[in-house]
Amino acid sequence: MNHLPLIIKREYLTKVRNKSFIVMTILSPLIFVALIALISYLTQLNKDKVRVIAILDHAGVIKNTFENTENTTYTVLSNMSLQDGKMVSKEMDAYGLLFINDAQGISDISERIKFFSDESPSLNLINTIENKLDKTLTELNLKKRGINLETLENSKISVTIEQESFDGEKTSKIDSVVKLIFGGASGYLLFMFIIIYGNMIMRSVIEEKTSRIIEIIISSVKPLQLMLGKIIGTSLAGITQFAIWLVFGGILISVTSLIFGIDLSQIESPQKDMVNQVVSESELAVQVENFMTAFYHLPLLNLVIAFILFFIAGYLLYSSLYAAIGAAVDNETDTQQFMLPIIMPLMLAVYIGFFTVIEDPHGMVSTVFSFIPFTSPIVMLMRIPFGVPIWHQIVSLLILLGTFMLIVWFAAKIYRVGILMYGKKPSYKEIIKWIKY
Image 1: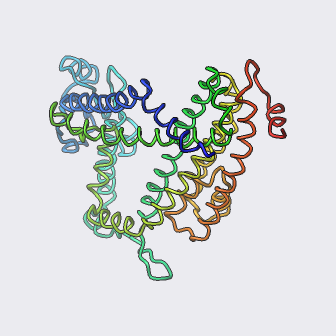
Image 2: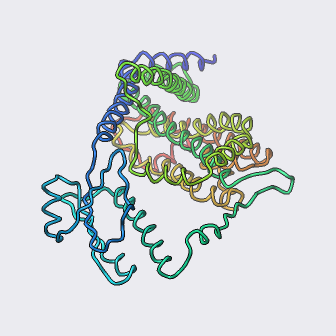
């Protein structure tokens, strides 16, 4: 009799009714949203803080170089020594003192600029000051050499290479970035799902084994059915939890923004000003148009179908290994010696995906590892946005499914013997003997 549907139902209901599962399903989005809200709130508090930068220019070169911003006020000190400038800066509670020492040449001035402060200054602030001084001193140096700045600016030529395939399909530089984002997100999501819910399957097997419940269950159910039922049931519980997180988290973010008036979009990074400066100096409309063009050029239908198939097959492959490890040991401490062979292929796949696929998606390394079953779920998902023949995807998927069936067969043998073994930490040699039984 086929007990697989009953086992799947039992595993699923056992997981979703578990108190820790319910608590973490509710608590995780709350913690996540609370953390985001706290960061946003602290960012807004920090945003209101105005830094005062004192400037002592003995060289007389800055003039209108520095303009006050919403968060930074520049105060120019004059007719005083460096020592007096330091004292005045401390008295006015300035964030720091920018000192430009006098010198005979522009290049000499650039080497005699110092910033004094009580605390280590912000990297973003120092970069901003350096960029403004670079521009000012460069212009002064050009004028000194008799070069007309307006003529020089008008002489600059911006080159934008139009990219087009031999079939006439237009592309752009941003295409690779968009493809990397979609491919990387797919691969990383699968990686995290395997790590989180694979461990859940392993712990579930260990719990049933140590509680001796498994001895009763195994008397009427085949080990292969029990293992598959546990894998599928736990996977469905994981998908349920993930879906609840998405819906509940989205609702919480909206409610938090409305009730507490916290603008989550105001979260800033130290690099935001530099990014904004680059964006403001570029043709933003062209960039947006290129992004949308790159998005529409993505094989979206192929991506969705391939993601579902490779995601399921890859997860089932690794889940069977996690279940076999759980059956072979008595506690989570003993699992450490067996985890490395599982984690290493996953880490290798992520490394190849982010460092090889983006550079050469159709190269030998990327192609070979997209067919190796232990790395193909991640590598192939990251290659597909760059255009992979359908027959390559089908062959890779068939190899992955065939390997899954083979691994399940081996894992079931380990599961059959290991599930009833207690009080002994097995070695690799003993596990190989179990497979031969």
